[in-house]
Length: 92
Picture 1 (cartoon, rainbow, N blue to C red):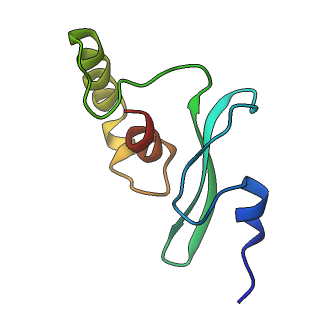
Picture 2 (tube, rainbow, N blue to C red):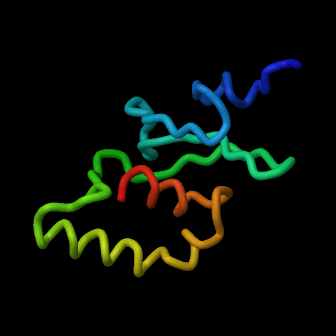
């Protein structure tokens, strides 16, 4: 079986494996998302912005995380083929 050229082009280890892209001018991460037969290269996250992480310690970071999830909740719910899903998983 031939390896998908999209994986090489994005420089990721495999499908649904996000990777940081520090040299990209605007987006901080890339992932080649696969759901069923559908495959899509998704760039997500604003370059230079740190998310609050999975377990925010300060009240400020907790509020930032809550606001992000409230703002993007409907897009996160769309699943693996949306940038918001990956931003939520990796940065928030």
